[in-house]
Image 1 (cartoon, rainbow, N blue to C red):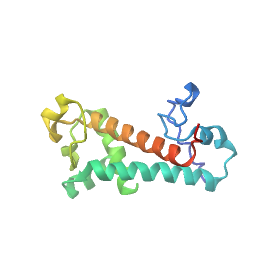
Image 2 (image 1 turned 120 degrees about the vertical axis):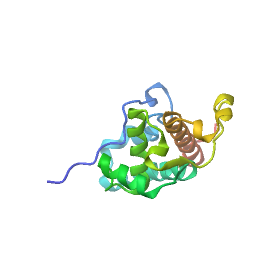
Image 3 (image 1 turned 60 degrees about the vertical axis):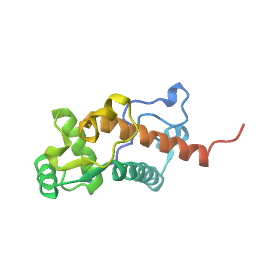
Image 4 (image 1 turned 90 degrees about the horizontal axis):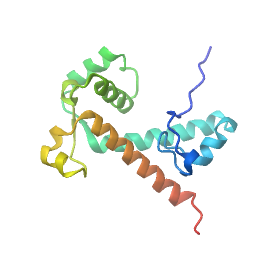
Length: 156
């Protein structure tokens, strides 16, 4: 029996409040409304776009400093069979729940993104995993919004 693929919905839908791009799943409002009418190829295309955006952002903000530690952490958490960047993202989410630093699993922040002055004073090592995930989420949302405005928004 083949399992049905899940919707990208994370249960934090902002399109009900008028957003054209959901702050939760990063899908466009029309994709959310039409989701159940999409065939598998259309749904996979949306999932692929969302995954690619997250991969692009992760590639900019996170690097592997210790392949051995990362490999072992992925095995320990059962994430070793996921694609590399998906596994790293899920591992970071796991680390937040455990309140552990990225270095413990061989990951590091590539460069300090634009953040508040307090975080800038601490440097990249001081940016905790939760804040990094929030920055990734924000950047993915901004990229989704830009994509929507470039390709779908009708000028007023």
